[in-house]
Length: 279
Image (tube, rainbow, N blue to C red; front, top):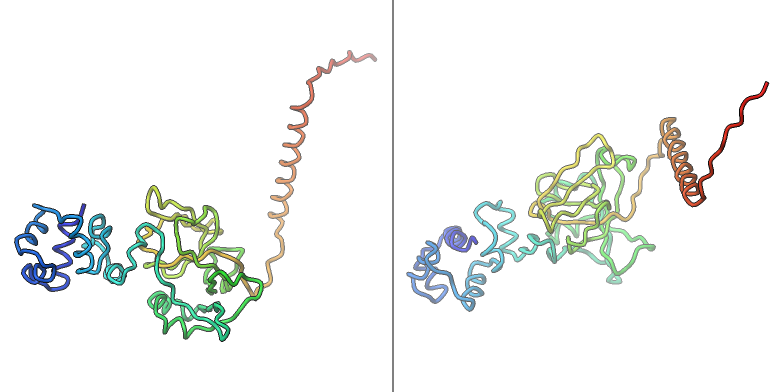
């Protein structure tokens, strides 16, 4: 439990004395001193008032060490975006609509990637992005298109435009599916994801290109999650290489061998006797 240290940290962060905090909360200064030194905890009726006073959720006040969080995370907590810790109901998404009030698909081109990391929740930044519509996508969902870079997701080529669906509850992330993630350290990344939120509060990210090693990301370092829907590329796929043909042939042989083994298992075994060889 981090309540005592968090209370003191938030009070100093807001440059308020114990006396000022006591007046603001309508309690005695000695109560503030007891809170900060761990001599006492506030009652259930007092916790909502403290939460409102500092602009931090009760859950975060009690269970998260706020002093170890980055300034960006703290600002998000103070804006009410505290539920990223559990992965559910992340935040209000900045979005745009067309003249008929239909959700646009905003395009985040390569040149806007860096700006998106800082302006993803800024309505002005999002409204300045190019927009378009894809008639075959559901009008009940929210989509956004990101231009990816690099070769980590080959055979999806560099500079492809990946359209993805917004995920507002990270607990619904499905193992082995591809997602666009906005991360604090690496910005926009496109990976195959495995959900380890419940046991480790992390996501495991893997590339389609085996050259790149998998790695884990703390959910506290993730800002947005978008599930892969489709991609558009101007590049023609590479011709099938001989090694690919060999691999396909081996796979087909293995499948045939399995079928033969299954048939043999269903039939009674018979012993074949070899007749003597007569000249």
